[in-house]
Amino acid sequence: MLSKKMEDALNEQINKEMYSAYLYLSMSAHSTNIGLPGFANWFMVQYKEETEHAMRIYNYINEQGGKVKLKAIEEPPSEFKDVMDMFEKTLKHEQFITKSIHDLMELAIKERDHATQIFLQWFVTEQIEEEGNDNEILAKLRLAGDKGNGLFMIDKELATRVYVPPVESKE
Ligand code: OFO
Image (tube, rainbow, N blue to C red; front, top):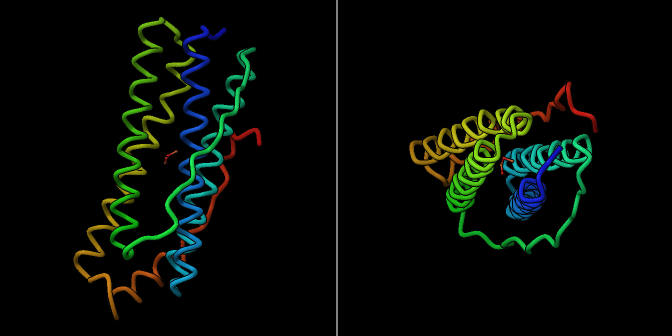
């Protein structure tokens, strides 16, 4: 069973994850628009992952007998200076999401909600991976350059990312 406070906070997180999905879908569209199919693929996989994150919380609230409440999704930016700009914005956004997950965990601890603490553990680990991926790509962009040949090589590499649906997902 979820407290009202916990339920509200989890519903907020669904909205944040859906915004993440929207943001990366926008970046995917922009990448296609500027002729970078590998970047477009990477952000499209990211979009799918974010949708799945939102659905995890959606399923969890339902399982706990709570009420899912969907809110309006904010409009994401559609123009970006260059790929570096996109990845800097991605990292900044993921740092914001990490903080939000940690706040949720703090609330679950305060409320002695053990089930939600266990549920959120997956997200804590996932955020380490999310920020790690972004830092790695940013480092490559700094090293290889975000123009010309270097950019072409990174685009080729990002084209290989594949979306793997989680086995335990109930979607
Ligand atoms: Fe859902 O991890 Fe990114 O935002």
